[in-house]
Length: 314
Image (cartoon, rainbow, N blue to C red; front, top):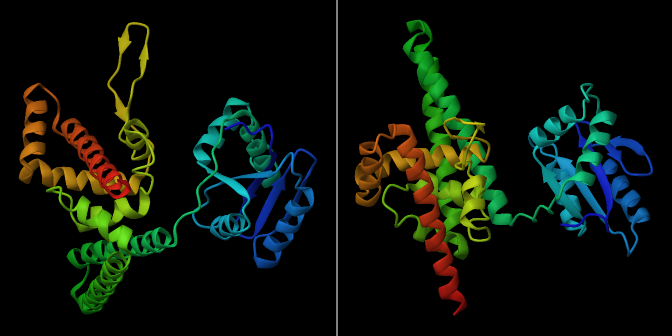
């Protein structure tokens, strides 16, 4: 995307402040409702038909949500970038110091030199799904910790730990019920979930995860999809040296669920089982074969969903 026709606005997001950097200068405002309204006023004042605003910011673990919602609601293009990319860019420029004003300036330079695309506005159902799945993840992690404590803690606190485990299990069941209800009541989600569930080995949680965290499945090509899921093998060759390929990056939540699905499919799905066994017979380690199976499952699911879309359009 050509950003030369846009007025770039870089925003470094912190818990309490937003550091705004443009080509003309910088300023800091509060990261709250009054501050966001003030920011919108500033952007509106600088807006010009020949150079509409384009905001660039980093993912910051949730502190960016209010800003993104405001910009999407106001029709202002915004690109949410991976902080690791910006940090690597800063290192390549020899910038070692890290403050909010410096980070905002680096982010602006990053946007000026890279081809960024606007981050699409998430659908309300996808937002609700991702929020519920995030909460589900919190609960499963807490349950795992409590169960581990039960194994190596004094008998005197076992009753307390067991109460926490029961409560966690009840809350987890409640969250699962909310997710099932959301999928059932939303026709597009329900249709996609039914298609994904036809693949043996892909369970309910993996289906929910793909719906929530990989909404672009039918809008990108297979190479882009594999990269988004963090399943693209990257080479590290130099001269005559040929190193092993490794997967890296991508969406860890999607990759984690696909790994579990591939393990199940490698035992119970005839196609995936034969595929994994064939790779292992050719000398591939089990985990490498599983990663290949994860890619195969993901690409197959994309194909099924695209065929469904074409069937609806015809």
